[in-house]
Image (cartoon, rainbow, N blue to C red):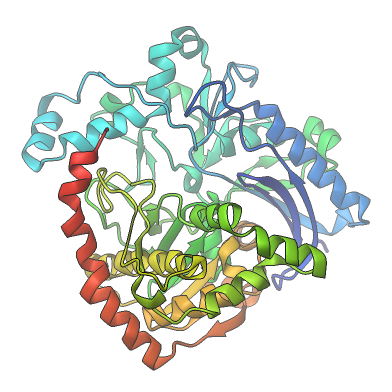
Length: 511
């Protein structure tokens, strides 16, 4: 009887086809790098949607070339990057390039939300936040600047919905993939009611949106056309999963609200899973979890671990060259760089808001580094970057605890940065909590596989699936003295930085 799961993970840099067994063991993997986007003008990020589909096909065909037995597969699940949108006609053909989540174009001067909603936002001091959301919405830009495309749009899909269509031939998507500037009711986990303010903020006909099904429910069977292109057996069930951050949380084993998932990726985030809807930051909703009728309380640091990549590109040539000469991974040498500097980086403290969020800490925020002296080296700066990210995520965790009433007692760390032992130990020391990495690097793919395993009855429920399919590989315990040192810097310096610097940030805003 087939019992393995095929998970397809369409990230920003690559598409991976991953085969998992019922114990969460990664049996086979095929990775296909993709060009994340192209840009025809500053700030634009677009891609031909067929690039994603061809990569999915190539990744799957690569598995079969490895000798994977297709008859062992019980179901398929898909997880994708969030916020990438695609307009298609009635035949599912894209009408324009996909607008990638990294796209920075804005639509200013839109008609503000009016009526009772507008008055309520004005009283609550939220009008600027709503206007920001309107300006950021991709659909508003397309409708304003490409009305002919908008008028011809039969369906307005996230990347997840587009790949589901290519796989099963139906315009349907998972509830848990709906993260973007769309009229989605994050509390009810369905499309917004007709009276909701979102229909004013992002005007569209509800008929252009796909049907939605909960996570772990069937989306359809693999079509004959998709079977021919991918090699996936025709008729195999495609089970609804979730957006990549949500599946990463699930794949890291964070089913209970006291276990937080830190994602050390392009955007650094902290997520906890809850059954109750709470806006940790007002007007910014919790996102759908990869578990039905549950929410992920998420706070993100935009361009989070991008800063680590930036440092390596700008200052890490020596380590890269040495690693090439020795035939080792450069991460080991960067870990040595971290360990060469004492906790606290000899007073060098960094605030990691290179690309500020809407309200955390505020749209005016900038990055800052304070405390330079003649003892500091590039190693100090590198450690300060890691410490600054950990400080920011700890601050976010405290906000989550305060709003939810649930104390966080354990950390799981996923994403590219999770492969650094030095970063894991530093995280444990800053938080004063044990920090563990999942047994597989492909946590988001594993989370999608868990959805499918529950969906087809391989495991009877999510607690059972989490117990069977997720495991901790390494755990880093906090050092008491180091944690005390970090507490002094975090409470006495870091938490005061934003308040003291905010007036300067406001003067520099839009300049």
